[in-house]
Image (cartoon, rainbow, N blue to C red; front, top):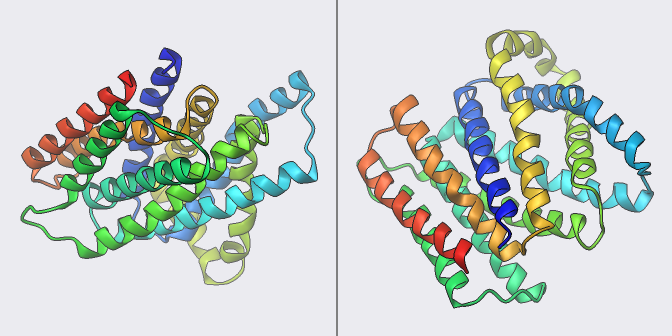
Length: 286
C-alpha cells in the first residue's frame, strides 16, 4: 500500500470519528433538520474551493456525471438519516462500531465477488481481525443496546453500498473526488429541503441552529474532509484494503465515547480496539 494512502486514511479516521461525536451530541434534535443544516452549511463552506477547482481544471459536468453522483447522494441520504436516528436510540459505542464493522466487511465481500479484487492471505486475515474487533465492541458488557445494534447493522448496509459505488465513481467513471463530495453535499441539501422548509419542521430551523451551531459547523467541515481523503485513497489502493482500514476510526470513537460521553466499559472496548489495530497493521503490511 502507498504510504500516502495510509496517511490519508488515518487522518480521515480522526475526522470521521470526530463528526460522529458531534452528531451524537446533537442526537436529541430533529435529525432531518440537523442534517439539512449540516448539508447547507457544508455546501456554503466548501463552495469557494469547488469553484476554484472548476476554474483551474476546466472540469465540466455532464448528465452522466450527475447521474452517477445522484445515485451516490441517494445512498448517502439513507446512511445519514439512519445514522442520526440510530444515535437518538443507541450509544455511540454501539451504533458506530457495528455500522463501521458491517459496512467494510460487506464492501470487501462485494469487491472480491464482483469487482475482481483478490486480497492475499495477510489482507484477508487483517479484514477478519478488524471484523472481530469491531463486533467485540458491541457484544457483552453490562448495557445491552438492541436498538443501537439494529440501527448499526442497517447503517452498515448503506456504508457498503456507497463505499463500493463511490469507489467506482472516482475510478471507473473518473469523477473527481471533490466534485463527487461537493455535489453530494449540495444534492443532499436540495433533497431534504422539501422535508424541512414545508411543514412543521420549518419552525425548528432557528432553535436547532442556535442550540447546535457548533455541532452543525463542525460536521459541515469534517464530513466532506473525511470522505474526500478516503476518495483520494481509493485512487491509490483497492476497495478491499481501503474500506477495512478506515475502521481505525473505531479506536478513536471508543476513546471519545468513553471519556467525553461516559458510556463506560472502556476496558473491554479498548481490548477490542487492540484487535482492530492488529487488523489495520496487518492490512497495511499486506
